Structures are given as C-alpha cells and as structure tokens.
View 1 (spheres, one colour):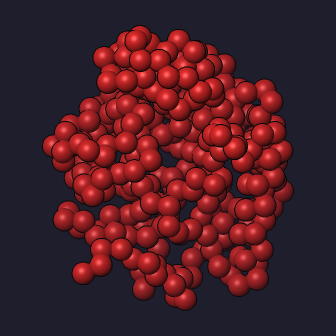
View 2 (spheres, rainbow, N blue to C red):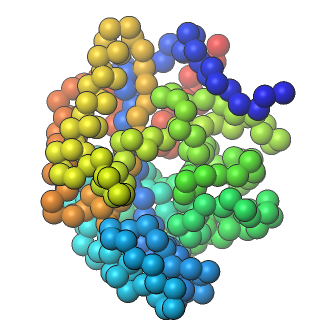
View 3 (cartoon, rainbow, N blue to C red):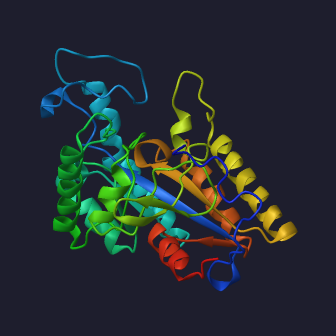
Length: 298
C-alpha cells in the first residue's frame, strides 16, 4: 500500500475558523541553533558547512563558522526579540539541546517573555541514519536539557531538514502535542503512528530567512524577504475573504540571519503588515495545536 498521501484534504478542506473569527493563522518560529552546530572542537565528526560564507576546515575547528553562529547569540537574538516585543508578538522557539545547555540565560529570557518551546534536536543535525533507540535517546536528552533550563519541556518537535519514519511516533511517546516535520499543506492534519493519531503542524521553507543563503540566494535585501512573505500573506487573506478558506503559514527565523542590521527591517515590515489586517491570527504553535484539538472533526 502507498504510504504517501498525495491528496490531503483535496476538494474537502475543513471549514475552519481560528479563535476570534480569524482565518489565517501565522506562526513565527525562531530557530535557536547556535552552539549546536557541528564542530570538531566539540567532538563532533565534522565542522558545520552551512553558514554565511563557504569554507571547509577539516584539521581543527572552523573559527570563521563559529564566529558567524556566535553573532546570533551575542547580537542578533536581542535585536530580534526587541522587535518582537515592540510589536507584542510571541513566537515558537525551535530549541536545540546543546543551545539550551550553553545559553540558558538567553532561553530563560525568551521563555520569560512569553515565547513558546519546541524541540529541535540535540545538535543542529538531521536524525537520518540513527537507530530508533538512538534517536529517542537524543530527543529525551534535548527535552530534559530544555526543561532543566526553563522548567518546562518542549510542546512539539521539529527536526533539521529530514525526519525519520520514527520521529513522529517518538514525539507522541514523549507526550508532545505535535510535530512539524511536514511541508505538504497549509492546515494542520493528523497522521497515523503505532502510538495512535498524532497532530502535524506543517512548516514552510519558502517563507524562511535561510533563503538569504546559498549559491543563488532568493533574498538579498531585507525588502526581498519582507516582500515575499507579505505577498504570501496577502494571497492567503484574499483566498479567505473570497471563499472563506482558512489557512496556516509559518515564517522561519534565525537570529544569526534576520538579526543582521541590513535584514531586520524585513521582519519589521511583516509585523507591521500583520497588525494592519484583522484577518490574521499571529500565534504560537502550541496555541495553534490547542485550537485545532478543540475543533470538531468531520
């Protein structure tokens, strides 16, 4: 039997209204990965390759790469949180376990400001290739590290890049509300696991500041990022008003990327746009999950 669902809701999308009669749920996710990137100095098998510039250091730690990631915690984190606070916007924090261990003050500050928690792996690394037992050990280790810092475990799970066939089931075993390792829809949906049904909150890569990176980056100026995301929001709002169709969109952020002075105004433009239209419900992923769980099922 084909394990893939290529149809989804199809022509029968559920008639959804988010809290306060909103039609477009907007989820900002701030990925906290600094200090969890691969490093020979930490005993990892290699140095991380993905960062602002290209380099491949194999004999020792990559000091250039480390410095780029450190900008995120030293400067970018505070710039992003200042803007979120100014716009009274709460986000979901995708937290790597080693980040929590190394930057407890930053994580406590963010959670104390009302932001939400999601597990993002012990390291900034896909679990592909791990046995089920090893993957679960790292997920538990990550959850325990986050709870030790801020007194609460993550409510959901999202891997870097590709999950394994076991990831959603392990997340459900650990008592999480949802996972986000899907990129195939604009509404939450249920997946079957050996532990029973589990909620999926889909994620998007196109509305993600990672697209400032790469050989041919999609975003160069702040307005590129802001403009693309605003175009996406405007289309979802149009569809909602035209047909009543509700939706959910995720906007992915990284302090070391969007926190640069030449890029932060893209985030500000998005936040200003959201405040101008009452159709949008800017919420954390935990709030979205709880709202979906309260909705009657057809």
